[in-house]
Structure formats: structure tokens, C-alpha cells
Image (cartoon, rainbow, N blue to C red):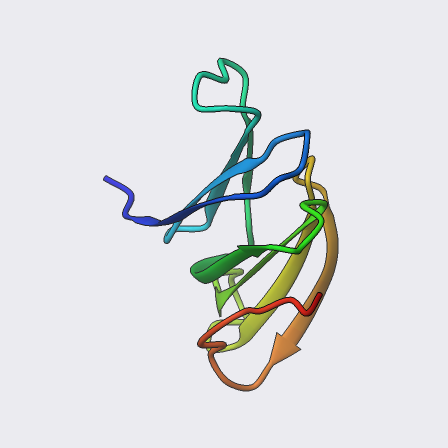
Length: 101
């Protein structure tokens, strides 16, 4: 069974509910009754997951799970459709994510 990292919502009109699992899976839902959520896998064992203030970018961080690069931490940015936008390698585990605004 996969452990839940957290659930977060945003005021965006599309896919406002995010459910993140520690194993790296993220589910985006229009509402709690969404029968066709967007589900995608990240490249990290999730330690943090956060919507930005406008609800169009999701940031996840954690330990890289790609074979051959173990031990590296990543911050990943996804749009609200689950498309990967950017990956930033970091030297230490990110303990929190915050957006200004």
C-alpha cells in the first residue's frame, strides 16, 4: 500500500485538488467526485508537494528515484495537467516549499 504524503487544494478553476503519494504518484482532480483524474508519476520519493498561488504549477521535491542517480535530491515543476516543466537538482533534501505572492 502506498503512503499518502498529503492533500492540497487551490482556488484554480481546473484540477484544484492534488493528492500526492510518498512513492511519487500525484493525482489531480477537478473535485472530490472526479471520475477521470489526471494521474502522473514523478521522478522522486515525495517529501513535499505544493501548488503555486495561481494553481497552475505544482512543485514536488524529494529523493531522486531514477536508476543510476540515487542519492540526489530534486525539485520538479509540473503544470496543472501533470506535464513536467523543469527539474532542478539540489544538494540537500528540501524541507519545505513556499510561493511568494
